[in-house]
Structures are given as structure tokens and as C-alpha cells.
Image 1 (tube, rainbow, N blue to C red):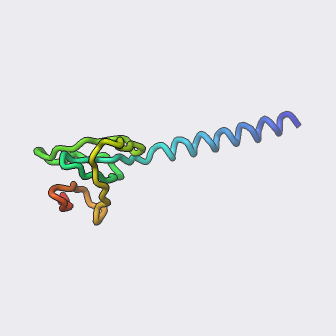
Image 2 (cartoon, rainbow, N blue to C red):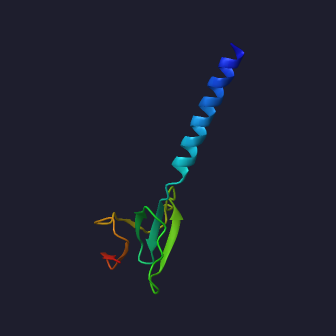
Image 3 (spheres, helix red, strand yellow):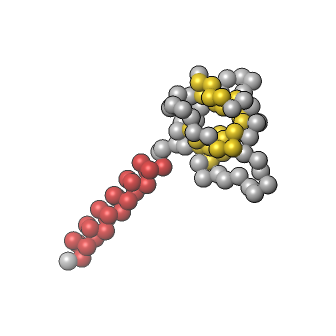
Length: 89
């Protein structure tokens, strides 16, 4: 009985550990530009020179006194918001 219980517990721990590793591999970030536009990205992106952005973790929230606008990109291409327009690259 003890050997069977040990096997079950070890199998469960292995399953949980595998799930934790695969769940943590997905990368998501919140990106904001200097105009106050923010959006989600699925991958860490290198932006063109001259594009001013701040990258935050996926669970980042702006404060009550901050002035940001939330956007979702029109497509899944890499890009950024500038002047209220999505610019893909």
C-alpha cells in the first residue's frame, strides 16, 4: 500500500511540475508608448530605433493617477501604436 501511495504522489508531483514548466514558458508583456497607449504583446519584441516604449510584466496595472489608454492590436503582427494608429513592422 505504501509503495502504491508513493508512486501516486510522485506521479502527481511530476505532472504538476511539468505543467508549471510549460505554463511558465509563455511570454506576455504589456507595452506602453510615451503617448499613453498600452497594449499586450505575446512575445518580447525589439522595436525600431526611435520608438519610445516601456515594457511591463503581463500582470502590470496602471495607477489611479496615471493617464493611459488600452488598445488591442488589429492583428498579431509586431508593431506599436503611434498617434492612435497601429504601425506594423
